[in-house]
Length: 172
Image (cartoon, rainbow, N blue to C red):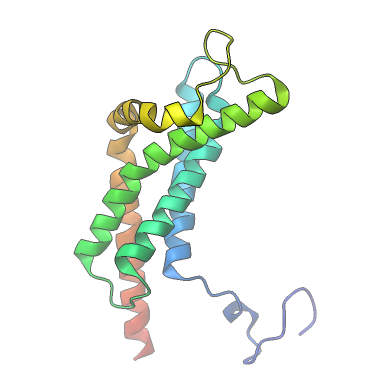
């Protein structure tokens, strides 16, 4: 085979890249996080919201992968209640992780550039204080966007379960 594709045993380069369900779930949730982050960026007034698309995508990727791995493992026989629980946890806990990542990003930006200040021009809240303060922000974040993130994360999991089930049936 000529080109950028590596040689593979059966000669089909498409089979070279096999993503696990955990990675698929993480990537799809990351895309959802990016879209929600861009939505927040577009709706927000003030400074500092430019980090939301990156932080939301990263938070959804990490929490999605972590919860999928813990709850579903490498099982090929996915149980609907477990997939739903994974979606609920991913869609809700990712909000808290997003606020922590935003805080870390703002602090790094402030330390390296002197920009990314708080509303009054001072340094942003420390990551340590945001570990507790993020609970309040998460409450409002869930209120405004949880109705979107929780069902979408759950739908992503159910979609992957359905595709996995059909894939298993075709292999028989």
